Each structure stands twice: as structure tokens, then as C-alpha cells.
Length: 310
Image (cartoon, rainbow, N blue to C red; front, side, top):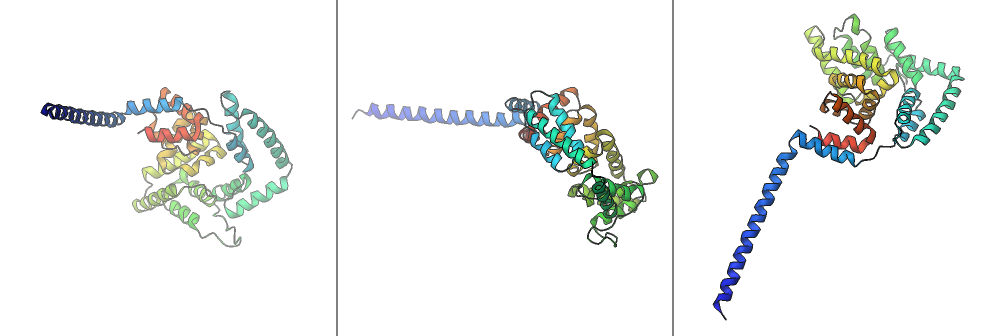
């Protein structure tokens, strides 16, 4: 056999090997460049905008239905109003039917003062509850009358539970006259399952720190002011609807800050697990526009924004 054939095959193999090495090197460089690029905030925002552009607005009619079934009519009405104002949002016909259903329920409830009165008394005695009347009754007993509430399971006995422990710790945190209402408020929220484990731990730690220092910590004062401001900005029912997502005083501050420019979108993002986005989005007109886009596209957009924004 001609030895030149082997030489030709050797050269082809060498060229193929060099081509393969070059291709692998190019891929590695490209991969490294991509990783570096994805670390850039501008690139990550660009990717997020591209992903958001491919998403359709979310159907929040189920949220409205759930709020109505739980008797949270004020929250349901505000969410329904937001959907109605934005003609591109799906589920508008369903929401109109739900509003008719809610009007009938409200009318029936308004015609049952006995039931409302009983729930108010139950909330007053227990220090909280699930319905609007029980919750308001708990707030009355815990704040207005400085009453610590009675145990639901044993009405004659004082409640000896974690709610009482937190309230007692806050009472020893030297909050002063302006914060006298706060222990009772937190007692009611905890007893009504409206406090996250993170915020509960935050309050306990700061109350202990404040008691030891003889004055309230800056973080605890921020929580007191933030709790008051969120109610002022959003109303009682909507504020309480967001409270379970709060983890620290900073969350309250950011909710109030965003609530001034886009209350509906802030409510949607927070209640759908996107409270961390409030710190990631720029507090600008551009940030507010992106907040609206994310809120209108629902859970998928919130999850995507949580991943891409740093």
C-alpha cells in the first residue's frame, strides 16, 4: 500500500483533533462569557424583560372568589376594581359575577346583626379570630381596653400561649405612650395566625434586646411605625392580608413605600410571595412600571423576577 495514504490519514486526524480542540475552547470561552454576562445586572434585567414579554396577564378571579368565601370583602372589592380598570386582564366577566355574589352576601350579613354581634363578642373574649368581626373584637379588647384576651378553649382563664409571651415581651420593651397599642395589636395578629415565624422571631429578639438596653431598638420602633403606616396606606383588611408575608421591619417599610405609588400591584406581589422584589426593584418610575408588569402576569412572573433580579 502506498505509504502516502497513511501520511494523508495522519494529517486529516491531526487537523480533526485541532479542530475539535479549537471548538471546545470556543465553547468554554463562550460559556465563561455567558456566565460573566449573566452576573451583570443589566443583562439580567434584559433577560427578565424578554421573559415577561412572553407571558400573558394572569387571571386573578380565583383570588377574588377566595377572598369573598373568607368574608374579606374589602380586599375582594379592591382587587376586582383593579381588574376592571385594566381591560387586558382576563376573568373580568367572572369577577363581575363574583361582585354580584358578594353584594348579596354583604346584604345578607348586614341583615344579621345578631351573628355579627356574637362574632364581635367572641373576638373580644378570645383576643382574635378568623372573621372580620372576631378580628375587630380582638383588636378592641387588646388595644382599646388593654385587655389581654381570653382563651378560646377556656373562656374563664387567661390565655397562656405564645401570643401572650410575645405581647408581654413587647410590653417590657419600653415602647412608651406612642407604642402602647402595639403589644395588643401583635397579640391579636398572632392569635389570628397573621404573623410569620420570621416576624415573630424578629419581635421576640428585638423585644428582649430593648428590655435589656432599657429603650426600644431602632428596628423595633421601625416595626411599630411600619405597622401603623401600612394600615394607614392600605386600610385594615388589605394590610392584614399582607402581614403574614412580613419577615422584619424593613419589609413593612418597603410595602408602605411602594404602596404610595402602586398599591394594587404591591398588594398582588406581596400576597403572591414576591415581597423580596420590593427591595430589588429600583424605587423609580421605571421600577414602578416593571412592578406593574410583574404583578399583572402573576406567579410565574414573580418567580422569574425573584430569580433574575439581584
